[in-house]
Image 1 (spheres, rainbow, N blue to C red):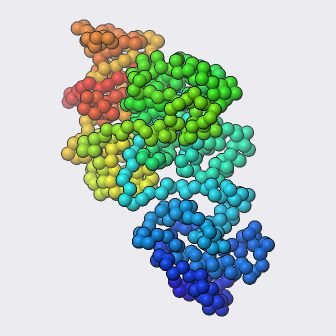
Image 2: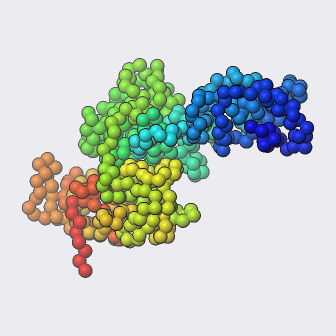
Image 3: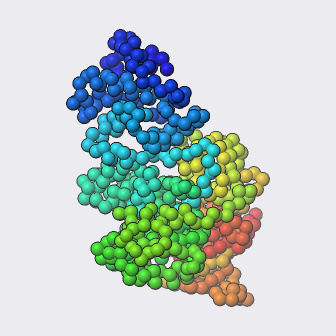
Length: 576
């Protein structure tokens, strides 16, 4: 590489670059690596800052040594000595190699070493050298030809203050999705507010109100990757006021993690009648979550101290309830102890807990069997959220079918024809998406005001059903008095929230035998099962449970409580 083509190391140097060019060329030739590969520029590299501008490193060195260091660095920067024949590299691979390469080639520190060190030092002068080494790239390295990892959506549910956001933040740190420096910044800020133990949750609770109160409100989103799978974390709010948000999060999940606190008093509060542990587990089952991992958190607490007795006590109380909700204790539920704050038993096994012989949390997620998804089915994408950003952007989880760029789709129930301009799967642009992926789509042909959460994106050949009246089987879970025709509640079905009225009770269903009564009931009460006709205030998109389970399950809520869960049996055509 001709030194005349290179930019000057700093603007002060620019005037005398011509004068020193011959000397630099001579020095460069002596250090030249003859077997080097052609230089592949790294467009995402940190801005080059020469070492002599950083006071820490150059105070003890005289100017002659500093100039010599720069020249050797320039040479080592261009022809990086790597194996032959691999010149088509992605940016991420180059970063990965830089970390893996030994730094014993030149006194300057090898490929880009001092440049990165210099920039990190400029930005955070108080950091020590060990901490610098711990900084991890934000995006995990992906090989261009690597097979697509399976997407799994994990929702964290449980009572308020059980530690859901803290565990989410700890997982992101352990898998390298949050830099150590960012967490240290959060820790400093949390200390100033006398909230030292909250700093990990700030990785997911980004909203100022959430941080001040220590309560999640919106469903937090983040993602991490393991060797085999790509996980999206959905951090659901635990407070009973925000259950509707939690239902929206659970409706996108394939797998739920029920976080319970082992601390004395906290588990009991969460599990009692008004606690969210019960309600969340039930809602997750209704939302279609098949597998449940129960994380017994705060095992490091002084009142627990990794006690097996306390762990078994929590387990004994939960299993009968989860069984009643519909989970199979042998197949669908897995219990494990952990500590979100210290990260014990999340990625690596811990010595504190020798009685637990299973895998830690992240390896356990990795070992789960693959999910069955129909990629050749009709396109169904329930919309979770929408906003304006250089066009109309929608967010949602693709339940079935495949979507590709420039495809023409139909937005139901309004039957708007839209075109997909761009596709992002977990903030990474892609040309096509498979079922189970969390997507951001930029659409053409529709305004943001014309979309509501709960609308469905379908293909024109196979539109989803829409209407206002349907027959459903309902299980009354909790209601003080009786429910008669004319009763109003709020219906939550996939991502849609709509007011609904029970217009007629058709028959009772026997819980054990499944037999239907011959006469129409006049009312239903708690713990009974009935088939009823429901009518919504507006037109909604839905399918029968038999045809499409994800869009045929629903919950009924009233006065901040979940009253009933149900499944759609039949869609009733509207009378003109």
